[in-house]
Length: 379
Image 1 (spheres, rainbow, N blue to C red):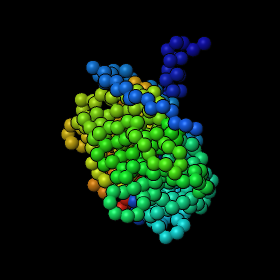
Image 2 (cartoon, rainbow, N blue to C red; image 1 turned 90 degrees about the vertical axis):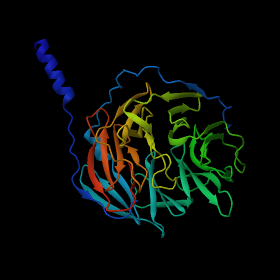
Image 3 (cartoon, one colour; image 1 turned 135 degrees about the vertical axis):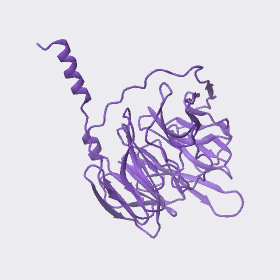
Image 4 (cartoon, rainbow, N blue to C red; image 1 turned 120 degrees about the vertical axis):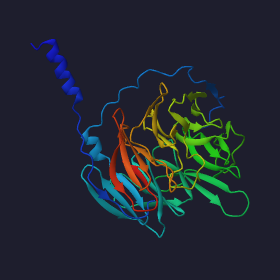
């Protein structure tokens, strides 16, 4: 029978051995770019009076099988680059039509691409992009098999947007579009497709979704001066008009304020940049909603990434993530489907880095573009 000391040593070896091969040099060139519930009043909870000392929950390490199954899809102008991170291979898929890809996002097991006036999807296992409709923007849905297409009406004056839900094969799910308040732009459809988040350029508003063919009514919630960070299910992360990071649950009506660490000067320093950059959001919830990655500016003036654990609002910096914000592009984020790894874009030169929750620092993947934009998704 092993002694207690030997048993502890064996346990330490077993729990400490996790290996991962960082990807070799892959150079990528090109220009990457029912009825709604009754309104719930938002109840703001103040931040703790003292810094939270609780350690973040331990996250199970991502095993090799998860990494092998997660390919990187890069919107590269007239093609989609599919990067096998572990296998160190790259292949390209043609883009239908004449438009150039401007953004990519993952929705369930489908990767969605937007080009000039067209939305296309790449279902799991497919080798060709499928156009599903004409749109100026695309919003994820709470349902994994549908999306919301957003179109801007032509004409002068204040921009007018309409949103329509479609299945992933392009079949409309409503007879007529829902009209957004003129001068506001839709950002996200949330809470089981019962609410829509918009911006009027000077704040954020939440509306209940009306029946098809109708216009949005009175806002359920309004946050003057707020900037959108990200949304997931019924949760929305934002930086309010006072510069505080808040995580709000639209179903429960609880809004919690995240205490800013002493070394963070401000949240989301890119909040004033244009909404038509390659990535509009300033952070990213993990797929399970347990963590939120967000850009920060530290006291020395450098921009980097921090991770907020949403259960206890503990904030942890991501070492070696400086330079995440640049003049050519808002920071782009995506999580592995398992949620254990975060990939983010950095500038000068445009490149990707990966960070595993709980690890000492982020590592470069050395997938970079010589110029232009970079927008990507993981599946």
